[in-house]
Image (cartoon, rainbow, N blue to C red; front, side):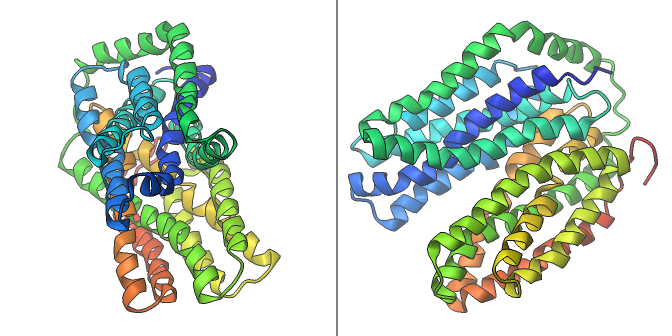
Length: 390
């Protein structure tokens, strides 16, 4: 087994940060696109849906391509297309051209993720969850940085300067070119060893276990995106509070999730992946209702704890899927990172229906049920730990 190699993991994590900068930045530039093209809210919303499908839901497709033949070229090309599509999106005057650029950027994001998670797994050694957390945290940071970086460029220099957003992509392409041999040699070695790999784990039980993991990720993602979407509405429209206050709560939640990603993976490698996932979801189910009772600094503490415990299983679920399908690591990564998270994100639409027909409070009450369902699904997973059998 390969040794834990932090330098390569940090490089791949930087690439993950870059592609998810463009993933998060589209939300910030959308209002400017709406005004420039005189779009309806429906047309603007369809841009986000198209991006969401292209960047998340179809990731298993790229994972399948990667599993058939190693595709490390997806790393620089994915980053290039993600940046190119986004950086040019402000120039066309035709809606369909904007949509095509958004799809190009989304496809680049989608191509990078399965290949990135698979390549990162070659540098984790026995600490697979810990290694993948180093890679994962780059995406967390990129998604958080993207909107702020975009708004800064637009407000200080104007829309015409949006193409400077491609600079992070070029920086990553240069860096990975310098370290290309270090990245690709383990990839080629794995390609050779895979030909003689025993497929004992890729049986019916493994796919059943994977389906439960996908269910858990959907519940976790639905909870995450539901909170990020409706907490601002809850404090602004329902409680008639300060919108800035709600924004600070969301920021605390996002920053805490970065800590949770790193801390949770280290603990899971010690305690067991499945056991830790159950604990994280159970703690989420216990802490989540407190958002309706806590006030002041205690509310910030609650959201900080929520960010840590809810997202702490992020890299763990990817590690579990990769161990269940050792000969289809790309597809396993695409299913747990792209498809599952994307499907969970689309669940926010249902929350919108609940909020429209009942209230925002009802939508948040519905969210409370989701981590409970995820926790129950976790118990059903038949998963062989490194040091024990479940």
